Image (tube, rainbow, N blue to C red):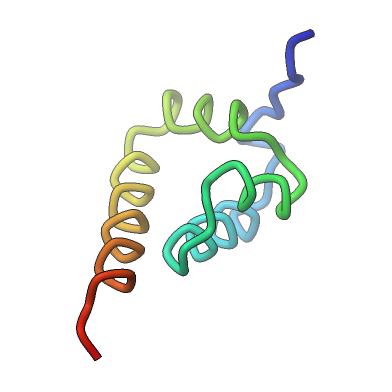
Length: 72
């Protein structure tokens, strides 16, 4: 069974911002997407269609890694 992919143009920017913020704080991408009401597959499709989103996602992952391993 394949998952339905929501076109990015129909998704508010606040959803993407929320997903990226959740990833930056430590949630796995699939959980962040599910909490935002979308799928990981949709997010991957958005990244394919919007190259700047790849950079934003990479930055969120970098923040997640920094937060996880930074010394207090």
